[in-house]
Image (cartoon, rainbow, N blue to C red; front, side):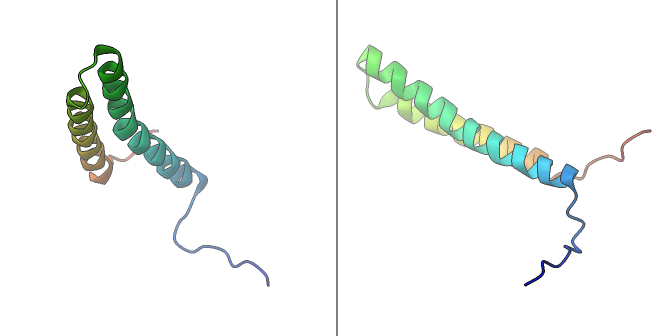
Length: 77
């Protein structure tokens, strides 16, 4: 079966933007959680810093999603 071209305006630039969004979402959520867990592990304060890291990660994720959904300004040439 022959592949059909995508008519949705799916350009390499848009694909790269979505890929960057995926990486930033995963790192913004997992980064603070893992750092909180490591600090908890070494300080013996489980689960408090892990919980703080989880909420910090969710806050960062929410801010990133708001920024992503805002309309972009046209590029100047």
